[in-house]
Length: 115
Length: 112
Image (tube, rainbow over all chains, first blue to last red; front, side, top):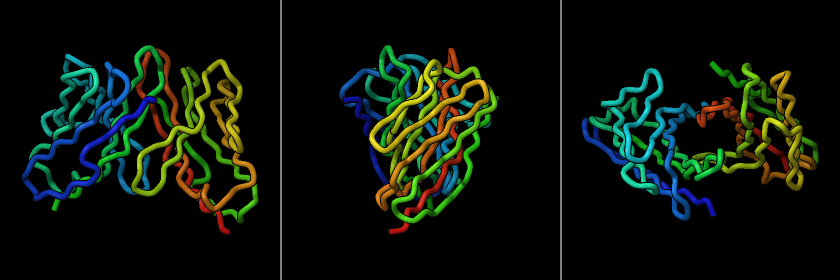
C-alpha cells in the first residue's frame, strides 16, 4: 500500500512552453501533498505544500505564478511549470501525506529538461 | 530554521565493511526523523522512521539511532554489499508541521 505515482517520468520541452506534472496517490487519500525540487547532487528543496480544495502554500523564494499547483481531488495534485526556461530543468518529486499519519510517501520523480 | 547536515558527503568502502552515516539537525523539536535511500535518477525509498520518543529502529542490516537532545542520528549498515551503493538522505519533521527538512545526503559506493 501507500503508492504514489508521477506522470510523466521524463519530459523535454522547448523554452517558453508550459509543462504539467501529475502526482497521484494510488491506494490512499491524501489531503496534503508536497512538491520538491532537486538539483544534481543536492538535497530536496521543498517548493510548496498542496492542500486539497485550497490554495497551495509556497516556500520563500518560490514563484507561485511560475509554479502553479492544483490539488483538485484527494488523490491528485498537479504542478505546472509555466513559460519554462532552461534554469527550470530539474528533478521534481512529489510526496503525499497519508491520512491520519505523519508519514510522507514519495513519488518516483519527474525529470524535466527545458531546451 | 531547521538545518540538516550529513557527514560524510561521500564515501567508498570495500564490500563487507560496516557503514556509518551521520546526520545532525539544529532544532531538536522534531516529530520524527527518517532515513531514505535514493538511487541515481530515481525517487526516494523510505528505509527507517524514528519517532521523537524512540531511540532507534532496526530493519534487517540497517539500524538507525536518534539522540534528539544532541540533534544527531546515525544510520548503520552492517556487512555492506555492492547493492547498498546509493545516496542516503536524512530528513526531519517538526512538531505541528508536516514539512520535511532534508540533508544533502551521504553518497555511498560499496566496492566489490
